Image (cartoon, rainbow, N blue to C red):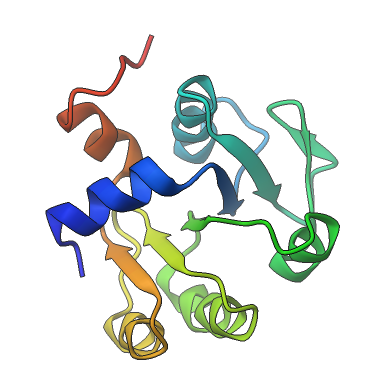
Length: 142
């Protein structure tokens, strides 16, 4: 977990990122981070039952709905939810056989992350995807 090579591989290989908890509010971190990733060429798939669309992309109420709509084509699940929601999200990731899970800064759940790793899911926990991308020198936040 949090291995620099794994982080680099996820950022290099992922093209479609399902963002669980992506807010439509531009003042929220999930919005700003996802907008940055979108500008870097990633397709952002909002998972938010309270939004119709975010960042010009249709929003889905659940990860299952997004998975079905995209024919399973999700490369990374990026989580902007409180830690108590992580176990259910991890169960979905494992059940859907998704390969990569990113828990944003402050989103920590060691037990659930362990389940994901045991199921063969690449896990990054308590790291900001934008900061990791910037630290590697890939693009700017502008």
